[in-house]
Image: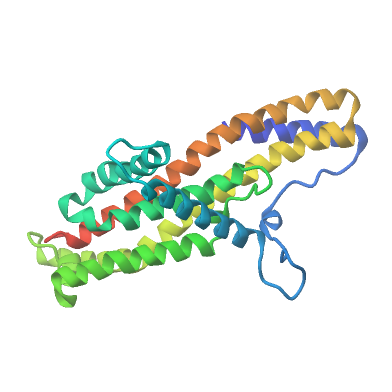
Length: 273
């Protein structure tokens, strides 16, 4: 779907360029750079604003959900309990099991935070997935990295944790020459990197495609006009379809991030992992 949208949008823009020779400036990484909101010398940028608003939204949601808790939940309590129950039963229960209940608050908060920052990319005015800035997914991945390594060391001891990780029993000893460094490298280095890049690149690419379809349609409608203005319906239609698809991807990526974190915690707690 995305490839079709890009191809059609670029084709229409090329037709417009050939007709009148005016250049279309396609969106790129520069569109993800934002100046300080309060002028030079300040540091508060649009991604930071999205983070603050997202944090306030999540805090407000769970405050309202728990303020007047009752056996028959009101609307906000039902929403809060539904999200909490989804993470507890659909993620933690299936991966960590009974030992994972203590991690449900963290994983629920993580899921909501990532989902809100992702969905900010399709919210009017904001129109920026804050997680497309690599520093944010990296910070979240490092927190998860600290959590699953900490619980593993606490459960098995420092030496026991790395022994179970690098030398699982039942394998021929020569295999350990290859397996041990690979397991160590994977756990210590690869996991936070993959968590970071998977989330960042999905949000970056999805938002870039949306920008391309919207700006391509605007170019045909405003800059070219005439018959080419009619053709602007195509990229605009793709932008609407991609918005719904992107919303699905944004929630899915929050789920994947939390699911992998839960799997890493489960592996750290296991006797042999």
